[in-house]
Amino acid sequence: MDREQAQANIYIAQGDLEKAAKLIEEKLLSATNEIHAALMTLMEIALKEERMDDAEYIADVDKQAAQVFDLWEYNSYVAHSQLYEATKNRIKFLKILLPMLKSLTKKWDINKSPLYRHIQTKEIDKTFGPKLQKAIIQSINADEETEFLKDSPELHELIKEIDIEQK
Image (cartoon, one colour):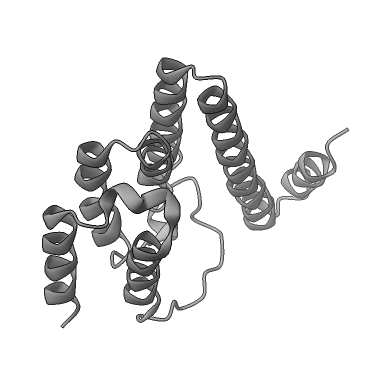
């Protein structure tokens, strides 16, 4: 038996809809994180088994899930960026990298979604997105897996564009 669901049903029966909604919304958000983790693992397996069409399909499903469940825009790019990195597809990786990096500076207002209206949020540090952008760029420059991007003029252009936006 699902404890959270049972507790939510009790709250509903007691007329405490606020508590029921908050509990179920948190459960849903947690489930979306589990789905994402499962999809990323399935994609990794598909890549190791050299089932590239399946890996692409799984990345597409992950993107759709992020959109369907009103997650932070950044989440919709993660699977494809990892797919393109793993397959060393420079053109597709760079094409997705710019919107992915830009999404880091966009605020995710979780409470605007009817799926998460009752979840309490904390004020997010405005420097978090730019710090994460720089960390991703540093990781790309330092990681052996992204060696295929090192001398890419497109990557250097992209870095310039991001730096301009941060000022």
